[in-house]
Image (cartoon, rainbow, N blue to C red; front, top):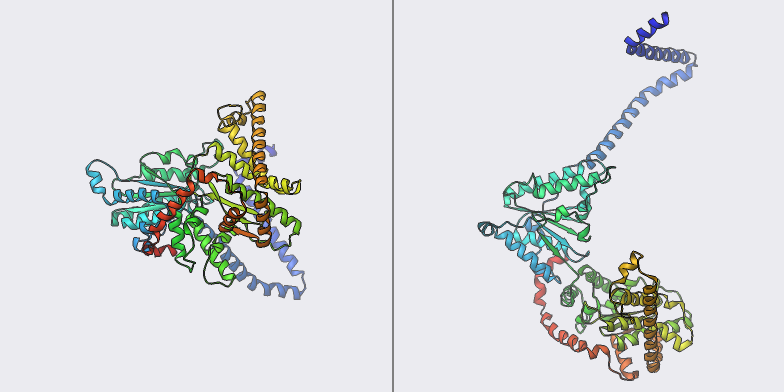
Amino acid sequence: MWLKHFQIWIGKHWLKAVLIIFGSLILWMVIYGIRCFMNLESFYRQYMFASVPIQIPMTVLHTVIFIAGYGFFFRSAMSKKQGVVIKPKQLNVHFSGVLGIDEAKEECMEVVELINDHQRVRKIGGKIVKGILMLGPPGCGKTLLAKAIACETGIPFIPMAGSEFNEMFVGVGASRVRNLFANARKYAAVYGASIVFIDEIDAIARGRQFSVGGGGQETNATQNQLLVEMDGLNQTTGSNIIVIGATNAPVESLDTALLRPGRFDRKVVIDYPYADGRYEIFKYYLSKVKYDPSMDIMRLANYTISKSPADIENVVKESALICTRDKRTIIEMKDLTAALERIDLGQERKRKIHPLELTRTAIHEAGHAILVYYLHPLDDVFKVSVVTRSGTLGVVHHQQIVEMSDRDYTYYESSITVSLGGYAAEKLSYDTTTSGCTSDFKNAMNLASHMVFVVGMGESGYVGDYGVLKQYDILSEDIKTKLNADVILLLKKCEDQAIAMLTKEKVLLEKMAEALVEQKTLEYDDVTALCKKYGVGQKRKIEERGLLQEFHDKLEASSRFKDDSLLKDNEHLDS
């Protein structure tokens, strides 16, 4: 009976019971502690009393340090970043200083006209540009163009990186987007407009993920806030905020909601500069150093296809270092080609090479060089080297002398023949080959497979992109066997061409190899002189196509760049 009464009392007064038990436990611990303390010897009691005044301030100090550190970490993660506002005068970047990307520059100049003349645009019922998305590989001038737009329009420039919106705490990204645009509106109210520049925007602009598990929800929230600020509920009339985004990610990876009209209205594609653009860029950066005025800069520009302006600047700086190490004061062509070789292939290795290996490498590279010189329809030899660098014993640098995008049968066939040139040269000279042909075989196989499976250039006459069927593993064994046979037949044909050409040019092959062993590096003029002296004199394919004459005409036309006055407005590019 008493047990039931106790259960009822506990049900009504369970909190009181817990407090009584907890208080009793603490009281017992205090009494027990005092008894134990009293039983200690006097020396230990004095020691404990003396340590209490020291422990109290140390405990307080540790607490303050912990709170301050945690507060600093929390504040930095939750800080309200608004972007540093840069005035146009501080930028000092004009379109005259943007070199090598004329097509993108013209498009941006049109945007500047629309911004500056927005009143006239509005009168006819149009709208000014709200967003510009700059797409292109790194180092080609996306940020420089964004600064030029701000400087030419004379409106404030607020830059931020896409990664600055991402933090470990939920909601921080969206909060920073709101703060950024609130700050931009304040400046737009004073100056009439403002530019928000988000570099590497793909960090917050990739396609949103709609998963049940909640993955990527923070990035989604940040992007949703950006969508609203650009053209949504928060977009107020007359705010005049132009958003410029820059990325080197493919446009397909970005969210489609960002790419619709009303947000990023313009897409400016900034590609690698063409020959004339590279000439201007080389001319500008070389004007900052001492260089040989007789240097053929147009040939150097053709030697650097697919190089960005940042790459070209790096080449000139590296060539200056090479020239300084050689205790010279004037940069020569060999310094620039050495800089390119070092940047592309790495530092020269100082290990001692066995004479037999060096001679074989020289024969191998001479075979490549001769076939490029005589057989290739677009490329010309710029440099041959047997200097050992990371992963390579030798290299032949060859590039198109005239930039062409289309590839025909002759181009592919000649490229495969050139790839097999080292193998053919070794086979002719030593009746055996080395493992140095491995990368050449890989390149030749890839080209031959592309010809047969993708662009319909096989002997069997099968037309179509069979690479798609091969990818999905739905290509029949019969067709696959015939296409594979076409690849082998094509490789054999190119091998026979390489052996036939090098057999005809056996003397040239030996002389070029000897020169490589002796000099380690042959420049374009050295290769040309050897071919004219020891070659049998057949006409080059590049001459048959008239591309050499076209190249020389372009070289003559490039005299319009000789006037250094083109560079006067570009001093700010050094900053």
